[in-house]
Length: 214
Image (cartoon, rainbow, N blue to C red):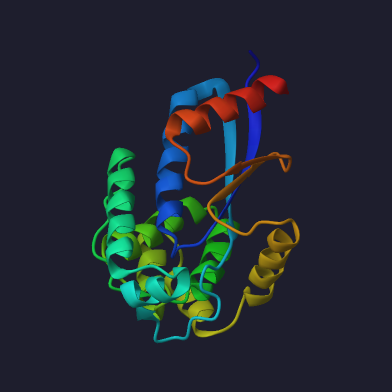
């Protein structure tokens, strides 16, 4: 079979634990596909908590209010998330706080222009979900940008201003207008939609079918 190129848009939020699971799962699927496909993976912004203030909110209390759950139900959901993460190689730590992620999306947009979006996305997900750090904090964003090979001075300038804010807002509107209401959502070749943090084998089967159909 001729090698097929797949354009994969990964619509997600750094604050979303299922997005961390979904990305690891997708990467495992792509590794299993090997040379059968050439994947062009790009990250698209979605904010679960767009109205979150700079101070953030305590995680359990916030999730109880947002989803109408008890503390016990939140704890059970978090246990399921930890188990699903472990199954695909993502280690969840304690996440005591929920933060605004808009600046993280601005940095990811820049990282995409520089060819480092996957590296920064991984670093941000690990910093928040694994280490409980604020993925919207200026110092964290600069530190992680430098760690993945991006320019320090440029990172500081972007964090300190509002560069790429309009671009991120435009992409958020674009996906909302296309009916995306939950993440992670994967869109392949701007035509095939895969919802949720699927297991690696489900991603693999879907991508293989799409590639063969071409």
